Length: 466
Image (cartoon, rainbow, N blue to C red; front, top):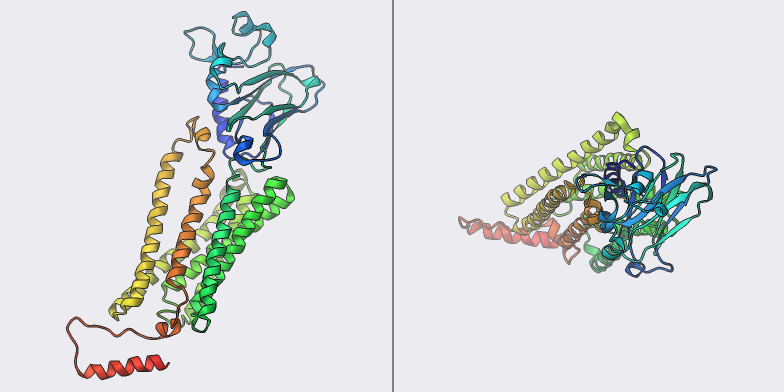
């Protein structure tokens, strides 16, 4: 094996390990890269059997040798030896020249070369074998410690071979990098169910004073319970039956559609809240129809984007991807601009009319939105610094356990906090409808006229009678 090939292929294998599944196919090629994935020990997540890496070569009539090695990432420095102290690159495969130079023994022909002190100094994770394609048997590598494991094969005597590598964890079929999503979405389902229960209790208690906007909040809370339950079910199903089956693919499409619906519903709800619907304005008139149309269009574009991202690879997409991304970006931008402008105008109107109690509600909403924006941009900045090191060979081994949270988990937490805070501010209370229909008596700093007392008193009485 060329002495520069192993480190180059190793980096490629780490990059592929970011997206690969639990079962992969290794085939011959100019540069056979290793396949690397995180693996959990049995005690970490439990299970009925010990985790293992299974390697099975396709039957062949050729009596040729293929080199194979399995190792944990931290033991990589023990693989390969320098031919001379002056050499920069290592030799990795035990063949005739390496045997003559005493880099390995004749009995090790076809195996990967390891350091003389490997057994004492390493963690004992390295296993190498010369595989005869004609009579090869399935190989099982037992996982005893949690770590980042790699499988490398190299066609020493034949380039015509293929092998299936399965990273089999004790808990089920999900890759180790995704198993944490199972309890995470289960926890989100429970949290949203709790929010819905508390909201439902207040809703029933004050059912005679419910505002129209509170009906929308009720709907989105129930929808979130369903969405999180389906997402949780998707990972539970995939853990039992694998990610590559037809059932998992259908489940995945359903989850993507629900996610698109959640995004559209959330933008719709936030926009009508910022417009003052139910608290400042009793009706939005024809504007409500326009907002609904925008939400439906955004959902359609979001659904198309979600399904396309699941069924079309980046290589297949080409320029056509713009036909999916640009419309979605347009509706998203429209929501952002319209929402922020509506909130600004609503707050300005309340401030001019000195409606301090209602103004306080919208100021709190403003701080929630502002806090979310700062949190998202701050996290994106930290992530950009973190992912700037993706070219570092240690990136995947150091981040595989929590990469899912960086890419997906934290945004769900930010969303949950936002929906909880908004639901709390707009929660059903006694005299909801009276509060929404009445105006607070403006308190001018320049004093008041005695004649205005009677008018204000009558105004309050009329509002109360309504």
